[in-house]
Image (cartoon, rainbow over all chains, first blue to last red; front, side, top):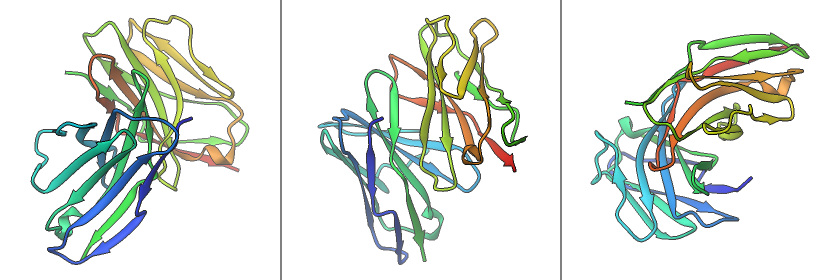
Amino acid sequence: GAVVSQHPSWVICKSGTSVKIECRSLDFQATTMFWYRQFPKQSLMLMATSNEGSKATYEQGVEKDKFLINHASLTLSTLTVTSAHPEDSSFYICSGRQGPDTQYFGPGTRLTVL
Amino acid sequence: AQTVTQSQPEMSVQEAETVTLSCTYDTSESDYYLFWYKQPPSRQMILVIRQEAYKQQNATENRFSVNFQKAAKSFSLKISDSQLGDAAMYFCAYGVNRDDKIIFGKGTRLHILP
């Protein structure tokens, strides 16, 4: 299957700082990428849909000014958590869509905000 | 609204035995896709199997097969000859071709007993 990478895999930051997470499709071009958030022992919650070259579409309740998404190329999307606070601590997962329907997921990034 | 329901939060199966995970969904669409994703302790989401709704034949991938009952809106996953490496969280998911999103169920945690 298609491979998606994320970097970093784990990041710890101080409250009030910003953190950038990268998502790359390694062996396919992903015109659409997705960002999810997963709390412990829960399912994936879609945060936003990112289309290459255009603005991301955010799900209801997700602050677009806090979670900045950029999809500058067909293989790279970034999520920046601005002015992070402890409640933003979570596991963030991205995926890239190959073909009409199937999403391939990155390994996730664990964010801990102190 | 589309929903995906997994009614079994946890299941256990003896190694080498067969287990079936249940999933039901609700939709008014006629053309859609269904997926089973596996999330092991590493938290990497892995696509196990996918099914196109217009196909009557049940999808199969090695030891994994589905029982797709379109009229009943049921999509169960059967794992044959269970192995220790099958221990994971399994998510049933639904997607519509005209929409980017995949909707996930809450997951079933599968334990494999040696």
